Image 1 (tube, one colour):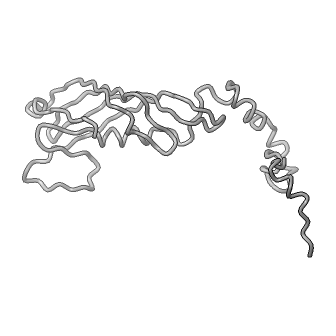
Image 2 (cartoon, helix red, strand yellow):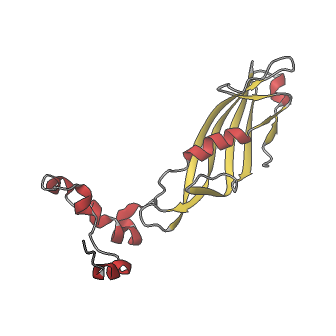
Image 3 (cartoon, helix red, strand yellow):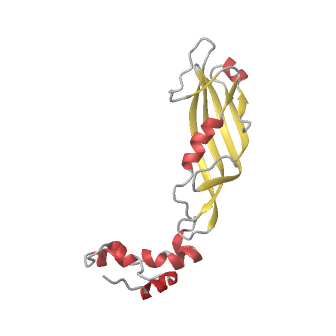
Length: 186
């Protein structure tokens, strides 16, 4: 469990008051199927007290590691996420509903871990790639650029099978060469 509890008792006492807050949150538990946050997530927030709760807005920044979807090499890239969320105060007599569009807190502390997860994890890319792109990457340029530079529009009218027949090479994997000798008799 990450320590992400923030004392807001002084803000609750004075509606309209503000506080700047800086947090360094360990990033090792923030990951998606293709990316993992490394190091710490740096959070710079402004917390404002309103009549029914606390508004938190600011930035979260950090680095993630992943496998480049172009060149299939390990990469480390930065990310930045804007946060603007409302934490509604729930009093002792109020019923707590789980289907709210806002985060809820009770007492003088609020926990921002779920807000951070809901902000950071969806911001990680679904198809990670090098920041310099396939044209400037030595690994990517040898594998991807030849296909990107083909005149697909010019040759697509002449294709009978499909675009994949032109782009993909029809080379037989050397491990399957033995199968050429296999003859099937009717």
